[in-house]
Image (cartoon, rainbow, N blue to C red):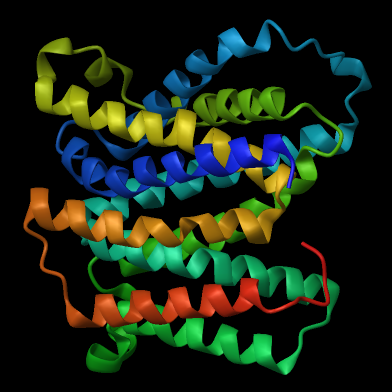
Length: 295
């Protein structure tokens, strides 16, 4: 493993901490602004924070293939939709449970998509996938409330978050093959902010009196989780591959559950704990038994 990969691993570990805390912070900032405004501010600030790093990385925009710009457009649209569902789901649902479900099922979905593309998987991996699916269903509490679990208290938004992020993991890895990663991130953040701008309530955003210390602290966490955490994740999908990068998310469920319990008094249901553990077992089996396909 190269020194650069060691650095990416360290940064990814820090990123996952910001992701875990962000689920609780998102529910708090939802009381101050609407979803579209939060998405707009999140990506606008994320883009601004990455500008200084662009100065030292020259790029010839005309030499970037059209396919890369198409990739950025698709990723940005998915970013917008994912973040809307992220804020809506944490607002009407339980952020701790959402953090567990999305972050444990995402690596499994990423793997399933790659398997479908490569059209090859051994039976052991298939068993691991089934365990992960059972874990996800358990987290949603489907075995107690039935199919209503798919539309219960924001669960449908968490499901979309997991699926869309799995798709994005693969798209983002491919998008950086012909383009510098930092510029790729900057383009995605800028375009997502532009998309969100058309739906944001600018007048409400500019009312500084609506904000207080609690908002600034929690919104800072939400922004850092994206501007730092997601940026590192995007780079990692290219450097380490989408499957390995996705597995770093295994630490997020426990952080999300812990912060939701401490700051929101969200109960830790036994189904969430068992579901999260089953999904983590699935992720471990998928990534620690030799694969016959490359990520």
